Image 1 (cartoon, rainbow, N blue to C red):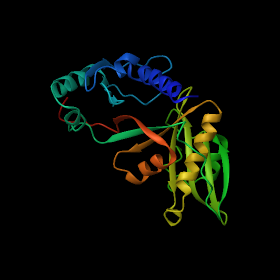
Image 2: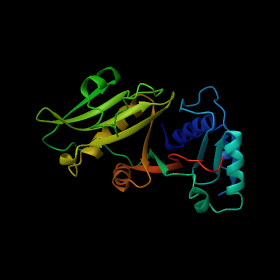
Image 3: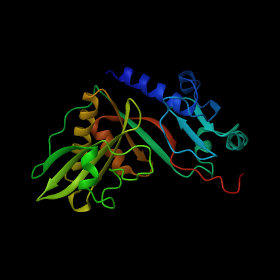
Length: 244
């Protein structure tokens, strides 16, 4: 898969998720596109309540996908504002940065010494893990529409030191998370685990995305070191209290 093919697949999926077109994602820089949210066939099964809001940009236009009441609030508060002002509006409570691998730049990483590594699949995940220790990497919530499908473990002296987990959220896209216990950090484990999992996903024809809260600089550094690039930004969560 080339970088161009990967981006085309991602944009097709995002268009389904947001109920917009691929052209909308690539329209004029900082232009605002408002669309009514809809659960299209093939969209990722994100939990959606009666009132819903999502904002996303791949660097050009800004797409706002929401149910009618919130779409109207967004129109009023966003029209005429700059990109920075829009993404800083009070009902947007944090941002997610979504990274994709640069197939040209990415290279296999040498494993850190003194650890052993194991790849496990969904049926083995719950049996092995403590949810409280690895909740950044592994999804245990049975209420969510997807779970961790692949996980790469690092172990030392019989203890799990770190985990990179991946969930297949639709036909092509896989979402990666990483968690290394404090006493094992700064040893190269995060980079190696994510790198190995990235290659596992690519080899099965999937597209890995590495998603990071905007304030998590350490995790963003892992992405950059491995050859990932920032592909899009979206809201992490929102709060319309007092506005509707």
